[in-house]
Length: 79
Image (cartoon, rainbow, N blue to C red; front, side):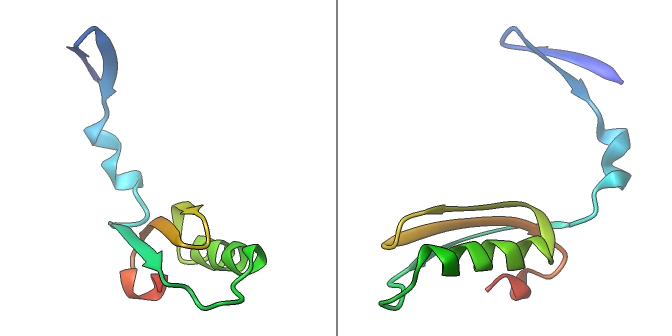
């Protein structure tokens, strides 16, 4: 690995390990105007479903807006 210095932060250039990436699409979207009656349990179930189609799952927000991030090979399944 080649080490690179950038603004006094050191990191490893690990492009050789790119073959270890399992999911090729970084998928992000925002959910707004959710149906009345949506519960935190519903959002947790959605988060769990996303973990079945990818990794690096992030689902954050409140009942007015939720930000979703997932690495997946089929972005269409993330809805």
